[in-house]
Structure formats: C-alpha cells, structure tokens
Length: 114
Length: 116
Image (tube, one colour):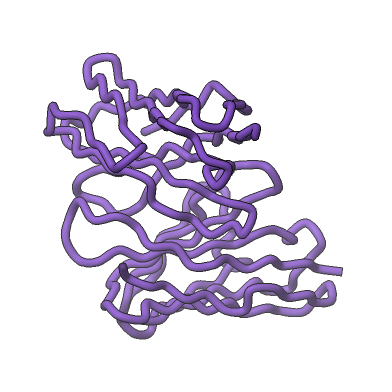
C-alpha cells in the first residue's frame, strides 16, 4: 500500500522569507505522480504543483518549487518570498500512473507572519 | 481549469434521515470520481471510487450500505448517507479527473454535513 507522510504538523514563516515543507512516501511502483495541494480556510483544494516520477527535473511554479528525491522517496515543497495568502493547510499527495485515486499525507498547517 | 461542483455546501439533518450530496464535472466527462471524508484538522481519507455505469469501489472499513454511491452519467456522481447518525458528521469532498494519466484531480467545494 502507498503511504504518504508529512512529519511537520505545523510550520511558520515570516512574510517574504522561504519555507520548506517535507513529504516522504512509500511505494513499490516506479511510475507515479506526486502533488502538493493547498487547502485555505474555504477548504477548497487547490493544486500547487505536480511532479511526474519519471522526470528528473524538479517542478517549479513561480514561487513554488519541489525537491524530488526519487531514491529517497522524498518530495519537499519550497515556498519562496512567502505571502500572507500562502497561509493554509498543505497536503502532499501520491497517485499511481494507472489509477486516478490519490493518497494524501496528514497535512502541514502553514502560518505566515507579517 | 476544469470545474467540479459539489452541492450542497452545507447540510444539517436529523438523526435517522438520509442525505444526498451531488458532485458534477461541469466542463469535462469523468468516468471516475472519488469521494473523500475529512475530519476536523485531519487529512482527506478516500472513501470510495465512483465508476460510471458500474458499482462503486469502497475502501476498507467504509460501509457501502451506509454510503451509497451512484454514478449514473459521465458528469454526475452522488453520495447518499443513509440513516445518518451524529458520527457521520464530517466534511465530504469529491474529486474528478479528466481521462488519461498524469492529470490533476479537480475538487468540489466540499459539503459540511451535521447530523443532529
């Protein structure tokens, strides 16, 4: 079974600073997808960034980037120039290539201090 | 981006009654939709996979007779919580993906169910 682990229940960052959220996963598959989702107080799930396991290059989306270490099964999210609007729950998620269902980590609550 | 609409966003029902939650993909066809449950300050737990035209696939520990899923069309899946009890109170979220691998999941707005 695939499991996703987020070991940081809460994180805090100063506005304009950089923060890294950790995620590890366990799988026997070689081909899969990894995601970071953001859930603000509205509870709407918003995709932040996506990584295909077969790609060695780390995905980047503006201020958001990942450090994907396939051998270590690690998938951390770096948020640069943190903004107040970044405050939310962040969920790391795993999906097998042949399936559409996702498995989520426990989440990390990010607080951004002005 | 694709839109998934979930309705109602909030519902309060009496214990023993049934509640239906709808999940619609507004601008794409989804042969598969997913239903998640989220407890306060916790993660999303997959309950079941809704398959268009066939029976839903339930995760271990989820009562299929309690949580009835119907996926009658390529754009609509419904979750019915039957004979609801206070312990069924939770936040329920659906998601759907476009055809093909690698695509992200699009989530509905969620439904907060309170059973009194």
